[in-house]
Image (cartoon, rainbow, N blue to C red; front, side, top):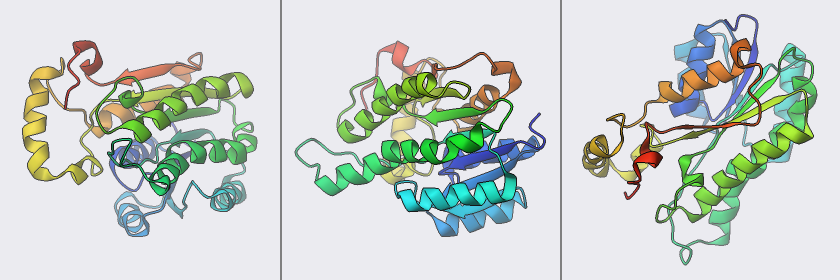
Length: 250
């Protein structure tokens, strides 16, 4: 389906981004993967082969995003799909947040996406059907304890998607809001905490399980395809019905 398609996925050395890259490669795309974790990039590149094109990049730094854009232009002359997936999270109460915590999270979760769009929009316009998918979170819609910086940044990303749709006509912008997905990032909460949490969630999520990375990746590929050519400016919640169940307490 995506033969000869040029795709950029940020934060794709692991987790959701890695699965997105894997599925695009499986469908014939060339995937530029931007991540700041050099070792994870190297490991993923060995597994996924030559169409996994690793680029070391901190998307929160304008000069690095500019270099990334130059490399894509030199190699491909265009960009067909851009998936803004890079993320980070640090749970804190408002009284615990330091300025550096705020800046670091907003640099990756919001400022970086604006920088990517700024530098890559000219390459996207050279595509027949350019598509940008922003990966936000249902944290943008619910009020979970300790998520103040992360959640407000993700809410800003959903709003940013809507503005981009209006400001850059001709490029499709859509937003995915994942629920709880089993990823390496989630494991930072500790394996001893995750097992009982996942068991508890089985009865609270209508689909009966925690999300998997392929649940998100499959939707990304759909939104990037010609089957979604008239879907623009929308947000899709992928949480197994968690929000609708009204039981978000963690």
